[in-house]
Image (cartoon, rainbow, N blue to C red):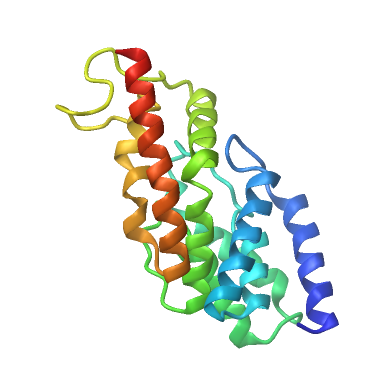
Amino acid sequence: MNGDHRQLIDDARDWAFKEMETSAGHDVGHIRRVVANARRLADAEGADLTVVELAGWMHDIVNLPKDHPERSQASTMSARKACGWLRGRLDDERIELVAEAIRCHSFSAGLVPESLEAKVVSDADNLDAIGAIGVARCFEIGGALGREMMAAEDPFCTQRQPDDGTYTVDHFYAKLLKLEERFYTETGRREAQARIEFMQQFLLQLEDETS
């Protein structure tokens, strides 16, 4: 990566931090972890590091709450805003790759990444939703949204469909334990398997302590 691109990435980071409205689970710490994950995956998979880092820093510029009616559009809004800032600073081909990576990182958007760079950023973001940090973020967000920790009856969803709009623990069954299916790189899948195993053990321990 040349010096011009390094300065561009630093400028993008600073701009994104000023523009982004932080919320529970989506703060500066989340962004930094996603970028760190993305760098590691990009190095292992051979992705364009400039594209990956730019998308990582700017992927949550438009950060709508989990219960916002337009939540599924947030990644597209972020991509559009990032493109506007990048015009004249980066070549068009890479701008489009950054935009795709930002658009496709979101679970709620339901978009499938096609480029390697978009797959890397999607995996990097999903890694921060699972494992120990995923457990911590899940309860942080559930508390911020006023959700109950767990259902009084069948708290681990053995006989009912999960309702993660009401119960925080249900979010593991509604989404987090299923994220392994949404990893696109070999490196990402390996890391995801270990983190999901940790969450499964956490839930077993939680069940043991609350039975």
